[in-house]
Structure formats: C-alpha cells, structure tokens
Image (cartoon, rainbow, N blue to C red):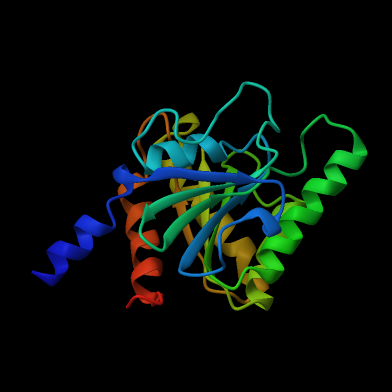
Length: 211
C-alpha cells in the first residue's frame, strides 16, 4: 500500500506551475525538496521538463534560445518541486542582463537549502562545453547528485547514442563524481521513464518537514 501511495504522490503528470521569480528572494519559503534543471539556452531544457511531466506547455518553449529569464517553480506534489533555471551560454541579450541571470542562478545554487539534485541538459551532439563543466564541478563540490540528460538523442541511432553516453561518462571520470547519464529525446520519448525514476528516487530520499 505504501509503494502505491508513493507512486501516486510522485506522478510527474500532475505537476503544476507555481511561480516565476527574478531571484531567490521572491521564491516561496526554503522548505521541502527541489530538483533544479539547468543547461545551455539551446539544449532543450524546457522541452525536457514538458516531456518528463507529459504536458505540452508546462514550461514555456521558444524557437528563440534564452527565453527563460526567470526562476520557474513547478510543484510535483506537496513540498516537492522542479525548478527551471535560466539557460546559459547562448542567449543573444545585453551583457547586463546576462550578468543578472548569472547572479540569480548563482544565488539559487549556492543558497537554496532545499535543493536536493541537479539535472544538467546538454545537446547530445555538443556535450560538456565550458559552462556545463563548471556546473558539474560545482555539483561535486556541493556534494549534490547530478543527472546528465543528453537531449535531442533522436538525432542519432541507438548505437551512436550508446557511444555518446560512453564518451561523456569517460570524460566525466576526470571529475571523480558518480553521475547518471541518460540519452534523452522529448520528441521521440527516449529516456523519459528512466529519468523519472532517478528524480523519484531523489525526492523519496529527501525528507520534507511534514514527513
């Protein structure tokens, strides 16, 4: 009975939008458990959130990379949230706006106590760019579990996907961390169940105040 209840509670299809905030001071109280999704502006971050939650327009997508300018909070269930952070490294916006985004992301990552895991989205064709490596390095220093989603995996066949996962795993070995790497496609529904299982495990390992 307990397992049935857990699965029902952690049904990503029931995820709802909560709020958008320009910085952490405007977010709800720092309680519960949050999993943040972060990646380059053209890495398919918002599409990945929509696919995980099986909703077309939960996270706003755009043909123009860099549309996500706020910290967007989504409730999976009570006290458990997904957080869509602004994309980095690509957006064609003024430099002062980039600095503002950078500060809001840095403050969130360094100060948000309920952060329990990090999902890093990377285009499978161009993984592990400089900003990606910085985020991964930070996750290790913060003792925070990280899931690498190699997005747009439908661009490759099965063998090439496996090859890319292996290459990224080898490259990440230099960091000394233990990472989960999943080939993922929002378009072709590749890797979605596996991703949900990782996120469920993170949430279930994190005790909220009410538990």
